[in-house]
Image 1: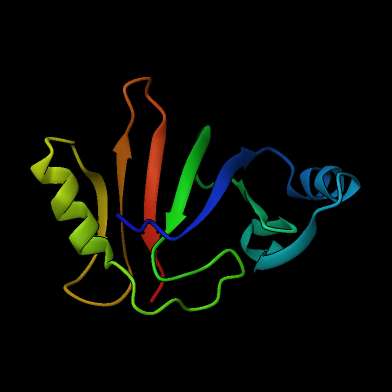
Image 2: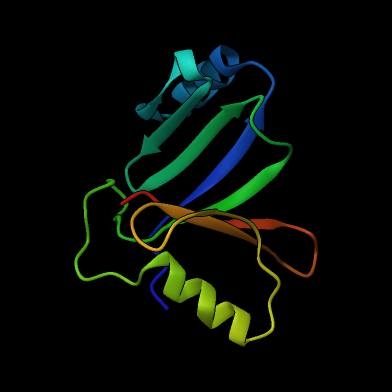
Length: 122
């Protein structure tokens, strides 16, 4: 199964303070928009998403169709194919969004309660 780019998505209380902290660790803003309360920070191949007021807790995130630089990867396994395979394996899928093609997402939860977001942008 090809899950695509990997990042850790963090729920933060103060986006500016979190941005400054991760910049001190060598991360740079790579994507997102501060005016929309989220940033994607990058340090080499490591990605961290900072999200203020969007969800609670920490989430693992995979982006089918993207590499670690958010460049398109072709071919790639569509999010709906990944979801079907996980359902066949008996996993519960929640928070589904999207249609029959294009951007879509869903969440599965690991045995310890950690959410895993599969989020396709194209």
